[in-house]
Length: 167
Image 1 (cartoon, one colour):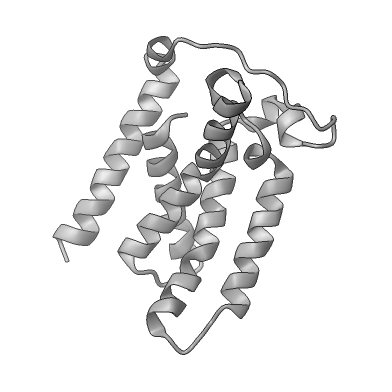
Image 2 (tube, one colour):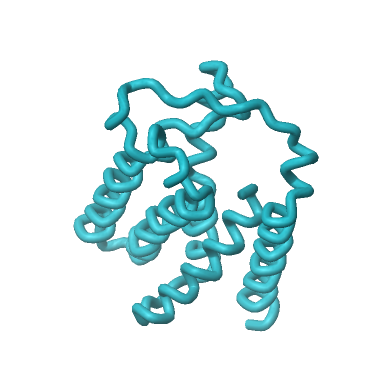
């Protein structure tokens, strides 16, 4: 999955989750938290992977369960104990769990379970599997990727229009 798919599909699921949990959210912070979370594993791993010479940037530590669990515990701790007298700060802190949710959804959308050496790192050793080189255009034109990007883009545009133009 690529950026629009990660962000848009995760955003739709996060809106659904917030609705089910009856969680109030401020649209700009909610959008930022979910999108940063949805991109977080790639924001961390791709530059590091390029520096270390992994093909395509690689899926490294931030694509592992260890990272997801640790980050989730940190996010929930910040949400629970990070409150202050500042209303704006409290609004920010209340959105931190959605960053963790986005990170988990990134792993799901990447179907990371097909790569247990990364998912269960360091269970299979400290190294990471070396990815294969890929042709970006060919990957983008794959129906699943192309549909994911279009759907994600439409969801993002719809969210922005709904929350910032209609209200």
